Length: 328
Image (cartoon, rainbow, N blue to C red; front, side):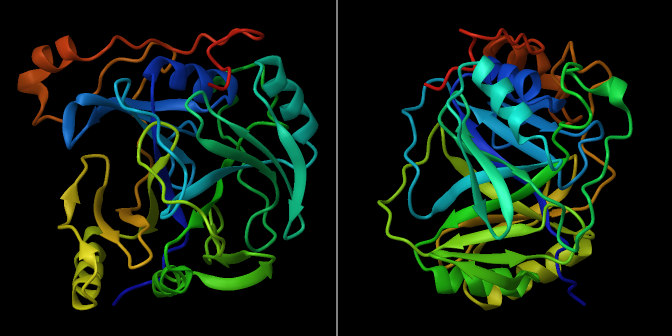
């Protein structure tokens, strides 16, 4: 029997330079580099995982670096922006920190009673920091091990807790709303052209559907590839696949991603959703300040070839005022 998703599992974006992404997400934002691996669909492309110290589902943001691709264009049908949850009272700290790295910051703006700062990563991906408690008024979980954080200069009272949610530019907002409701999200509010849907879990529960005119997007650095929601186990993935296939949705087979199992569905509004299984976390790095390439066992025989074709990446080296954290 299918169960409602408790919320987001991860969000995956496309960036240009992988090292700039590590410097920004780990060095500037203070997320842990949970895993440095490869794109399982293209082993000659890195896949970077950022999150809390365990890489817990609901905290994870991942990137595909593609340094040779043309810049993307945010539009329909795409994820318009990704929001991270930070503690109440920390937005002024974050404004000062981001501006020290020459990151342009807008806000704070208010929606649904929450304050948010808006900015972009080095590739132009739209990001937000939202000062908010989670869905049922419960505060976001505290990090369990402060010593494991890569960026010790970020005080615990300000550090990113988890994903807050995403905003979607759908080609058919009503169809996308129907998919969200099928997955277990409920409509909880409307402000202007923004309708908020929320899952029932305790973290990473928000999806906003934007009913606005927008040009068609173009996939590439600076855009979001997909958003993933949590499901309990692989058995349910097969049930979800059958349901979406019966509705004539474009749905993949169930895939072994080594760190979890998943499937992908392109819903009628054009948004690519992934359904991914719950785990204790995706973190594989014992020493995240000195990352090494992690490969599942079926790629190990080709490690030498794979490593020879990938750019070398190191731990974060943020430098305020004139670093790679500039918006470009």
